[in-house]
Length: 324
Image (cartoon, rainbow, N blue to C red):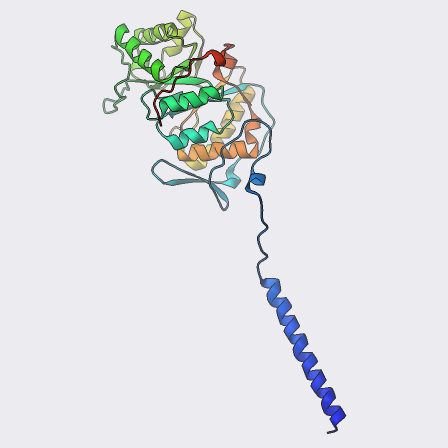
């Protein structure tokens, strides 16, 4: 074989090797994951106008929120309902059982100010939460414990019963006002036994009004609850609960409950009063509503607004209450 032929074969072999190597590089580079872009975390926050909303920890494909005991409640993102047309009937939304857990309080405080809070006066962070909520112009309610029909349920030392005297009701409400000085309303915690006693509810409304409470919401924990009946007799504004959002409700049922809220608001001529609780699944679901804009399906209002009560919040005496 001539030297010319040998050189040509060598060059051809080298060219083949280089071409094969280049192809392998292209193949392997094509399967290598692309580097993640550097994104400013603030750019991921919703840009819709209005008060800030909570940004809870998000896992892949679901929203998660830590509870006070460290467990995680999850709600798939796909379960957040799409945004229907807004209804005309206003929705009053009250978060019950607040004041016990600081994480739940901080979450709700990041939601729009039309979400009202009913605070247990003996809660560990009750005074701090009320102070923050009033600075945000929220409606704050005394979530007054009342005795239950169940004898095994202890409502606590600040509970009103069917047999509580005028003097004792005044003592309890005065103490509650000391912890929650900017509260303008009241609703009952439990109350199935006490709230069925007409004279007991008369005492609560009469003394509560004398201590500066402007309105009441009957949580209707019993069919024959008389809180609003007493308020009507005394000429004090009162709203009755329309539905509990999350009582005995599984997390996966919350989207259907939200659709029920929308449906009731569409066909009602009266305000829809919804009471929810700071359960991990509820917090995660509502956070999803505020993130996606689905909350705009209804017209949200404070209780004082639908009752036509002018609350001069700048004049409210906001005390330090119970420290965190």
